[in-house]
Image (cartoon, rainbow over the protein chains, first blue to last red):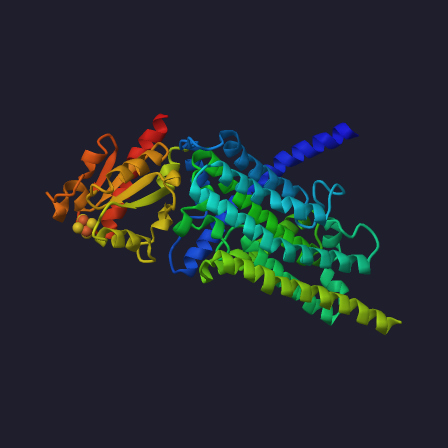
Length: 337
Length: 144
Ligand code: SF4
């Protein structure tokens, strides 16, 4: 049994890695194309990210003289690997995650910090003042968005545990019991607040404008990534694509776990294809609203503004969502009793 | 296929070595919606480590000499210098000025250079220069 599980996990991970990299890069291409159209440019072809990675792979990979070379080379690998690991815990297209039953929402909250932490480690290891500044900024950003994110995740899990018995903390449970169906009016308003909070947190998780203070090209020359070139930079580039895909599908799994195949009378394979395409559509919509529109529409914030945005505005929003969800179940209970 | 990816994806680091800012504005113009170099995969990056092409404007003043050299050395191989403007070719309007270390072929004698003449050159000419830079990168990348 363990041998079989081991085989399944290894093959699944390899498959998922290829799948995630392909999709992550395609989504990056879509993102750039839409951003270009919004600025009334033609924009790069959809395949552009693939060319970029191919080019980076044939470039020299320079390790600066005063860098800690093993950490410097190790950080990109960890960043990509942890982004792919994240995806192993997230349900794709209504199907349970690969490592179903081995981890829950709380584990995902922890896994989410690893790509960012490895970038911080790589930044500190590269021995450049710009990278150090970038790494410190990344840590500050992490500290500021972690709390509202935890509040949002816990509120949803709490609401689920209130409504159901079972493994309420696992994502496959949450995604197979759409949360919107189990709350009243107050709860829906609360969920909207939580959704908004999570959508505002996404750009910071992904270091995108307006929260990309850690990678600000114009102020600190690329920040964390300033010393990276060639293969290492390509790994970070891939990790960014995979992370974007993973986080968008996390939002889809929690907030929009609906499938459309039950509306058509189809065999299992066409149903899977339809669900999968619908899933990709949902993921790209999340990405469009959380990343692309925001990225084109606004300018970069200063680091202090990032902190106050998250600690005051977004935290309040998440707490309000939590309170509304609580009231929702209490009012429902009162009425029923 | 791999060496072809240079043709599709070229990242540029812009160095101003004491230009009058005319050429820099033309480089920015090439990024605007009217010329939109991003559709060819050309992108301006913030760090020389990420760059394939160094877009060098200006005649290289003596202050900038070692900085230009250092930026050039920081770029990973294969790399090309795109000299934008007449300044970098001959000194241009600053020809025989007392504080020039340039032109470029004196400061970077063994760099592969692509020259774009003009004072300032039009964005079309800059894009054409980038196309020429591809050829060098392609042969350098394919040879490895
Ligand atoms: S070539 Fe002309 S426009 Fe360009 S930097 Fe020199 S003087 Fe200015």
